[in-house]
Length: 350
Image 1 (cartoon, rainbow, N blue to C red):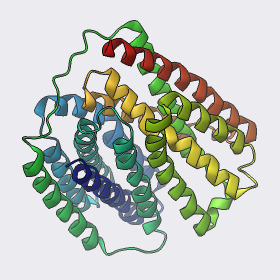
Image 2: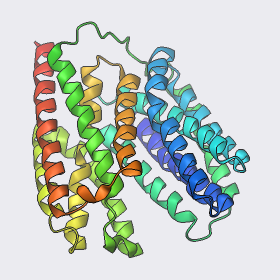
Image 3: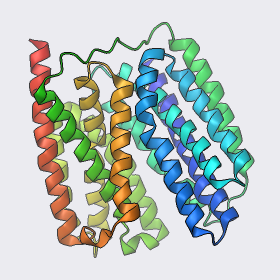
Image 4: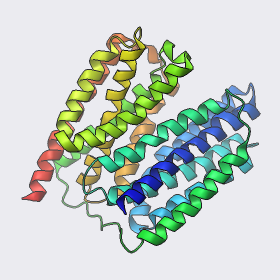
């Protein structure tokens, strides 16, 4: 049952993120042509509804306990977004809401069967990066067979309905209670969210010149995928605190050499992404089974972290010293968060 849930959601995660970026970055962008301002607004609208809106959606989904249905509806909305491609903002909003519904439903179901481990969530979250990359790349290579995207989304909808029939009586959300969260847990939550904000910001600005080589760009995105997978797997074996410190320390050091050495840059990116499932799993465990709320909090942090990259001057950080410092700062903040998280886990186990 666990393999079925993780495999189904991981594959469809790739499809949904692929479809959303084919719509927004390819179809809508080609329709707008030189209207850069409207395209920028559409991208911001999409990111807001796809990520920030997961917070209220997650709170509602925790109560409804219809997670696979939530994700299935999300797939239909993403497909529907293509019908409104002539209205860039509306298409982006519809696709963003669909993306939000899918991610929350899948996130809750995967966390429900994770037994407080990070491996399942690491696998689930990893595939989206590849979908985003290929969807964004589709416009550059003239992809216009949009019916393929609709077929994939329809098959995803059917698969999720089938999944719901298989797990509805076996996997359920646990009643959420927040009344016993102490100040130390609140600090832990804040540290985890700040870490995600930093990871989001850094991920947005990593435009190394060597990424213009398509082969290196593909390898770099695969390092994101495998970084998230390995972060969960290794974290479950050696501990969340160790993997967090080791991965971010190595990443910070390697970023110094990443501008001139693609191999070291790719390894730095892999290490940098290892903490993704750690932050998600830790936050979910702290929030007393409020998995949708936890997922929504972190995706809201992703949105907040991305905004400075859209509106600010990234050159302050995007340099050898800047990337090293911000990564090491993230390591310290995450260490504090995970330390407090471990104290919380010990407390509830005693």
